[in-house]
Amino acid sequence: MELQIKDRLYIPAILPKEGKFSEFNLKKSILRKIEITTKEREAIDLKENPDTNRIEWDVTKDEPLHVDFNDEEMQYLKASCERISDEVLPDDMWGTVERIYDALQQ
Image 1: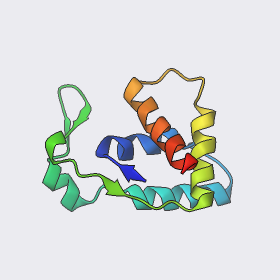
Image 2: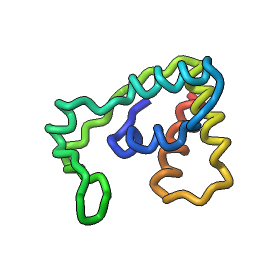
Image 3: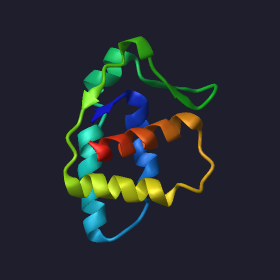
Image 4: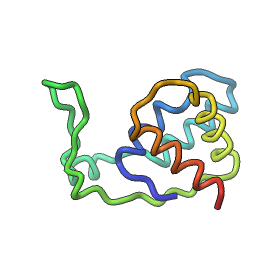
């Protein structure tokens, strides 16, 4: 699955804040795989804008990260997306949800 920086920032927000121990371990594994390293942060100039409290980066330097999620992780991501399906969220966050569903179809 190819993930842009925006996807990697949204996925933690999609995942549940609490759950069983097995779900905690799945979440931890997913977060480890999508982590934005210090080197990446510097390369794309990732920072929080103090005026807007928004995270910003140079999108022209945003290189997609190829992530291989196992079946359990993909099912956890799917369940997480289904859990938020009735919430009102930004359109670009729904784009991340759509990318997860597309990956499930492959």
